[in-house]
Image (cartoon, rainbow, N blue to C red; front, top):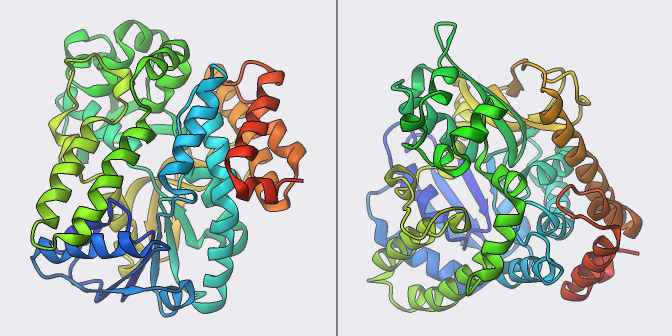
Length: 442
């Protein structure tokens, strides 16, 4: 079996390769093919992988997309169109207008999707020609919108993933004294916009007891992030990205007050790191591991006090790659797994259209991913989800048809953009910052 990783020079790729060396996974994939548009990044990550040791599948590099996709059984799509510079522009254009500068939530997510979707659709079309039976596990953000656009070409053979929901369930279960594997979680929403609404074991919901216990809430990241008072008002635990909705003003102020945005921090870190990785094969693995931990420590830093550290389990890694490999094993070996995934809604949430991409628990096996039926959203949840669904519809239309009006609509109706005039300025700023948008939108 062959795994192709698009964005093969990405920082997280060694996590995938390292996980493929473990028992239960190493017997499934014979070869990993890395493809990236930047040769330096491929050489750097190749040196890191060579330094990991531990055996596992063979790894080779391809320099053309068609060669990388030909013969693939599964494709991990982890591309970043525009690179770190694109992310910085997404953040800074928004911040200059006083609105949230974050790459997947708010106007930055709209700009990121407008750049990513056309490339992802081209990948889907080439894969349909070259390896039509291959499965796609989509990491590319914003995951829900990119997954939806790729499904328009490849159907349900595209499955989107994010590690935030599974991480939330694990942390909440442990805080309640439950083993995560024993828990049936009621989690529902869109990518980066979901809520944990129940933690059941043998039919008993343990979430109310967790919400009533401030000490238990203080023991895990989302409990500290939102605080007991807000969580009890909501009656659930939101995905960490909802911090940007419930504390928008505080988030914008913290990001504006920081010396650098998250994108600038990663740009500066990786701008110096990749040449060192490429030029120091013997030290590459150690250099990468130190940088990986530093990167994880800075995740969502604007939501934490200066002396608050992330949970050690989250710093250790094991998020995206574990979810991705679990999906891969399920579809290739036809071994059923229960995971929270970004999948076509069907009839899982009857308040949303069948073709919506929802983030819910699903069973995945050799036939693909099928979401479980979920309880309805309450009025607040449905309001936010409906608003973001309107944004997603407009973004996908703009990215696939080139409609400037659809792009403007997406920014205008976004709940984190507080003015139609600002929306127009945002679009002008993003078109000026990204040449590909200037040629796409008309």
